[in-house]
Length: 298
Image (tube, rainbow, N blue to C red; front, side, top):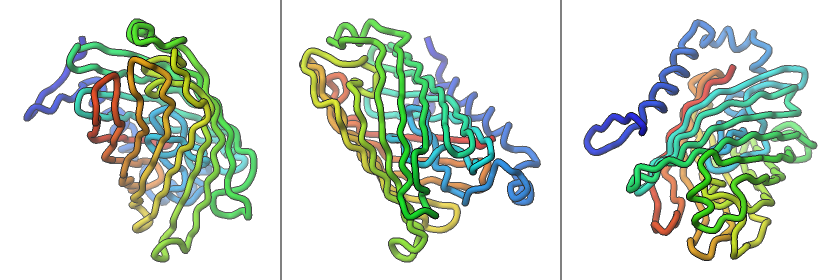
C-alpha cells in the first residue's frame, strides 16, 4: 500500500513528493545561472521551445506529445530531461515519472512509469512506457516547413487484472504518432504563439491504463490539437485536446482536454500546472481536476 500524507482532505503521494524534491535538489546547483546556460552546449534553443514532458514521457505538453523534441539540444548536441508529474481528478490519481534523451535534435528516446490509483478500492495499476521519436523535417521557428516528427510509444501493464476484467484484448500495445508544429514569434497579440497537431494510430484504453483494444473496437486514427502563447519569455498559457478511442462496450471512454500554464524560470527547470477534464473513466463520469509537473533539463 502506498504511503500518503493528508492535509485538508488532500491526499499526496509521498513517492511523488520525494521525486519532486530530488529534482529540485538536483537543479538547485550553481549551474542554474544564466551564464552557465549561455556557455553550456546543451542549451542552444530559445527558452521554452523544448516544451515540457507529456504523460507518456515524450516531449511536448501534458496530455499530448508535440513535434518539438525534449530538452534544448540543437544539431550536434545532446540533451536530456527528468520529470515527475501528478494528475488528480475526482476518483483517481495518476503519478508519472520518467525521463528522455535528445540526440542532435533529431532523435528522442524516453521512458515513463505510470502509477494509476483507484481511490475507492485503494488499487494501483502500473504501466511502463518507452518512446522513440524522429524529427523528419522542418523547424518549429526557423524553417519554411513546420516541424514534423514521427513517433512510436510502446506500453506494458505491470498489473493486468483490471484491464482483462473490463474486456481489453491486450495488456501491452504500441501506438504511432505524427506531429506537426509551428511557432510564430509575432503571433497573437504580438506574442510568440505555437500550434501543434497530432495524428495518433493505436487502440489504447485510457492511455493504456485499461489495456489495449477491446470487444467494441473504435477508429484507430485519432486527432490531438494543442496551442500555446507566451505571455512573456518565461510564462506560457495554452490548451490541449485529445481524441481517444472507445474500444470497450462495458465502459465508455471520452475525449480529454486541459488548460495549462507553464513557467520556465531558466533553461534548466520548468513547472506546469493545469486544469484537466478526462471525461468518463471506468464508469465514473466527469473526471475533472488538476495536474502538476516539474521537469529538469540535464
